[in-house]
Length: 436
Image (tube, rainbow, N blue to C red; front, side):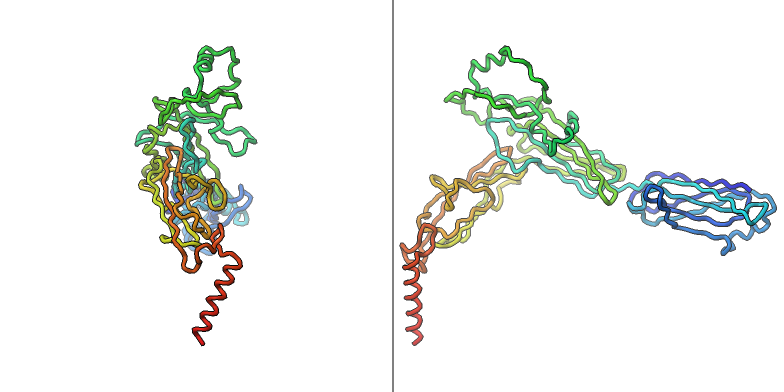
């Protein structure tokens, strides 16, 4: 007897699709059994998913005359109605027939196939790296957008666009081993602000000054950290909104794409886009991260617009603060949608804050038990991100508290010991007398 087994190949399938595995075999012998296995753990474990035993079936009764040589072609199918990522992997079809010479002997053969299950990405987001970060008017800054794509299998193709046009970027090398959290900020070259460099120093730079060349030139177009140098800064600096380090040509973009496997069988992809920020042309620029994947009929995208903060909206509670109250001054939002997240700094104009500190970071400033001395004090909130900075001011008006006679609070707004005790005792006696 002879037996040949083959499984029809399948193209990659998408999660949720119905799939039919087809096992074809040709024999001139008597059918004994068909068994389908799903192979896991690199082939060490075989999970039986379908079994056909001819001893308990009459489907092949027409082959009872097994001595008559006859070539017959059969097909066994297994249907997976809704595939999942966990169904990804190899499958085997095992077929057994009785030997034509004796029914005591069984001839075995098998075929195998790999079911490739794809999954479209489920989420995409664009973030700004190293934020919140301050605005720098006199030093070039590198800026990095990070696009995170989750839930896909295999890894998707990720790319960036600016104002709807694809960005041509230079691939960045992988970070060296053992560097930890590598950031492009330390990799790139920064142009000096020539408003701060004396002419003599600038002239030396033009002719080379006899200085040896650097050992390694970082990628051009981005800012890098300089070593400690002594630099003479003139007292008079040309006042400009942005100095000449701001490039007027098209920026040079650097791109990196990495992906890491997730426990559920999908892949998390991360793409970064880094360039030297130019607040003059990058403010209100629209950047989009787009994803192409074989399981998607059209690209998936997420957009962000780089915007400097403008017009912070500040609220104060309580609206009518009295001596001894706890006052909260909060930035509730802006006149525009700000990206990336701004950095907030609170200062008191002309003095220190109530707790003695020079400044406070955060969206909210809390003043505990305000004393009368803070009446009329002015507070400044500076909101800034790498694209710009804005200041807004609010004045604190402190009203008298009828429960605290004038002059009885200390610098923290709390009652002094003896006066407070006498006041409480007097109020208690008054209540007792009125009740009697």
